Amino acid sequence: MQYRKVTNNSYWSGEYSTYNQWVESTRPVAGEHLISYYQYKYAMAIGFNRNPTVYKKGSAIFLHCKSYDHWSNAGCVSVEESVMKRLLVMSRNGVYMIIVRNQGEIGNY
Image (cartoon, rainbow, N blue to C red; front, side, top):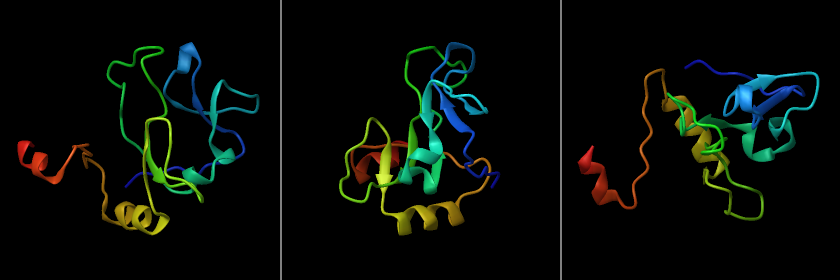
């Protein structure tokens, strides 16, 4: 599966012209400085608010590693690092992620 390695210049943009996109920049970009978050050590963008992207509708929604000391986040889905690594190995281009309230809803897809 195609991937990118986070660098010191990696941001998930909250700016109008690049909203909800990965941006490499030597200047600070409004949004999330990806390297500043342990949770993004391994992560996948879920694809929320894409095609078309609507400014201020929501940005930076990921499946990522949980924090060291808590599960809470701001709209993302977090899993243990070991689970995240397994999911990355199992994933390939064209894979879809669905979010359901319970296992019974999977049959709707």
